[in-house]
Image (cartoon, rainbow, N blue to C red; front, side):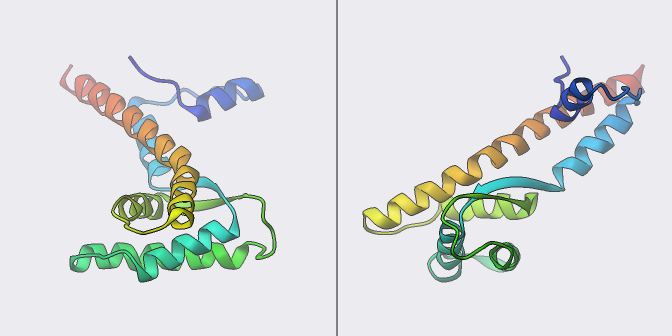
Length: 155
């Protein structure tokens, strides 16, 4: 059973005319969405904590993880530059899917000591959770459409 994407719901709610697309076009659109950006709601202080944690405390292994670490830190640095340093409230930033996946992977391996570090790491992980869940939902929709495209081609 095909799941309805958030974009489809937004089109219906906005009254925009629904354009009939082939299954392959829908799949291509979802694949492009999956490799794009997703919103993360986080404040400057927690994003800076994350950058420092990635930069100083989390071990990577091999060239692939090294590349993921480099790209995550560079992207987070750019996001930090765009945020107001003095603002304490969370702000929505758009981060590439690859950065979100890298951050999720590396903070899952993070170690630390003390209550403050534990609370900050947990807070950061909760800030990234909605984006990770949105990416998983798109992955599920892609899997459904891939199966439907295969069935359509074999028919």
